[in-house]
Length: 176
Image (cartoon, rainbow, N blue to C red):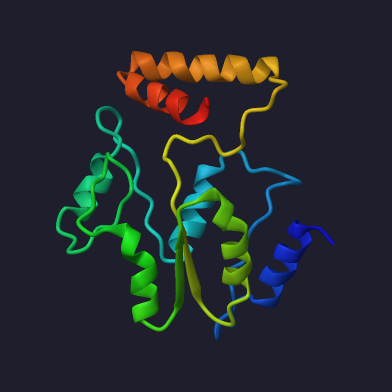
């Protein structure tokens, strides 16, 4: 059994026990709808969520800022939406309310932390700190032409939209 199988088995064994039926999750594999945002919005609303439509032009984060302007507590790890609480303490908050909580900031600690997190008998919080511009999968020594084109297009668009610092940060964080 692989590590992946171990993790999935642990997830299945520790599924939350709730006193209400879980929402049905539609599968779009066989016959995808004409518009994915519409069923997404409907399901999000059905689960109690709120979808904020972006404005026709201007700042796409304006609806989010307007929604949280009077919030007493805002936890955020992104520069564009600064919070008023240190999210680094999330694991401590979880412990304070009786949950298992742990924070990981080193890559070498993630596997053991995930195993411990998945082995908890009840609700648990694992906060994994990552660099915001770090690539999800490390670069391969064999780079496909599609990946090169995709990265070039992203970089060009970012530069044209005044986000050159994001491109630079991504390069610095991902190239040893």
